[in-house]
Image (tube, rainbow, N blue to C red; front, side):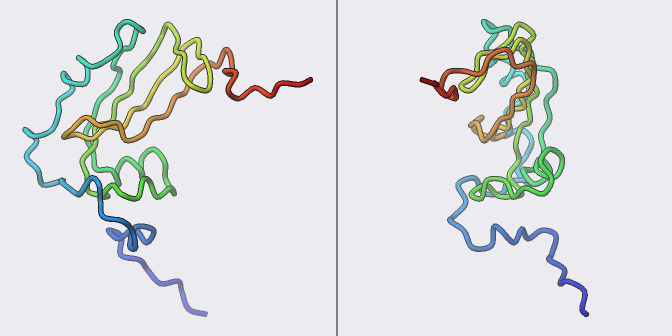
Length: 138
């Protein structure tokens, strides 16, 4: 039996046939064009007690490899697009669409040039699942 064919590492097979990239690769862009930590810090919801715990730039593929290995990510974003990864804590809690948290940490993935939100993940202590997901029993 033959060994499975190797896929070139820079070519994500799930992204070969797809729509044009909304956010094309820009890893060779000068760092001066990227939004800095201070910009994102100024955008935090301080009224909600938000605190920036960590910040780094990386390519979208590096983000996928580090935080969601095995997933393909969002298909119209180039693997070589530089993103800003923000880890934001909400020590006083957070009310999100699907749940309330007594404490929460949000990992926010934003475009490093525009600041556009690409995706996010919330982790923390859930105190209440919001009514959108509640099944009303008769």
